[in-house]
Image (cartoon, rainbow, N blue to C red; front, side):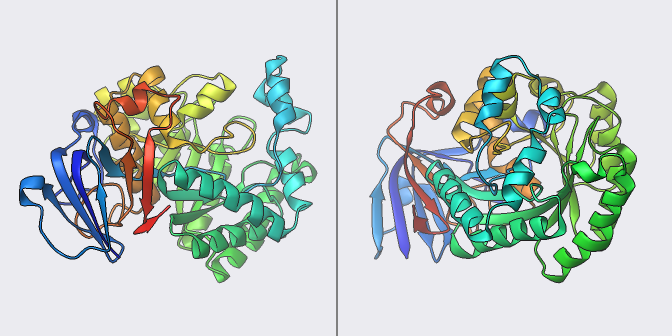
Length: 411
């Protein structure tokens, strides 16, 4: 299909030459074309420019975007969309004063989700997960990373990863799969961490690799979960099977986990609600993308990633949802962008860069997603009429998306 989008008020994130990411002061620059056109053909971006140069031709569909902004679809590089049931009761428990750690210690949290997942059929998990995926696509997400980690058994983890693969086969959204067997220690291994890590390394990883079910390996590197040394074992083993690390770290405490992740060439380090000066120094000049998850901070009332400090130090930053049943039951990237502006004091330009081009880097898909660049995926958001794209974070409770095109398909 050949689509012409014309009379675009603001065409955002225009990059004539593809770049991997933006860092530091560059994050405040969001290239755009006013009064623009955009041509999508054969599922890729074919051309763009000002309306004065808009070509004539035969198009299968013409969209008049008068008064509207057009930008690349959001890239959500950290989610747990595949799960069973919900954890509504824990939401109420937190309101009544229980902490994340207290809920986990009484059998809630990740272990609660693992119990539900292992009791639920693969078909039912798929049906629940596809509903969430379809919802985030209508909210403007065109690429999404999805983690396992609610199985915590060999079969449970494989079941989750097979569901992720099926979603990738059946929907136009770009999906990357991350193996997160090291999400928590099952009850039977609570006093024998080494035995569970052996299970991950000797049984889970070989089977996942044999079926080519994952792109990345992850672990919850945190006090009370996986130590630096334990996470390093998992990263080293994952890399032997071609799985690049993408690691949960510094959500509640700073225990030199970021240094270990950078040493092992992690593609991203995610959460970072607690960041030390030493962490910032370690990240400078590395290949590792810091990823903030502001809607998690919002939902469970923990600190926000110190974006201003990190950007001022010259670092890049990506934004993602952390969509999961316990601490962020939302995959709405529009809310993430708005919350980053409102609570983390990121400018709209920085937040949009973080949710598009830097998110693509954190997913390993910079060559196909994250910017309006010829040859990249025909995945774009068309807003409702706006005075300025600044309204996207400003009107944080409004749905300002009119149409979404993912890989050339109207959603």
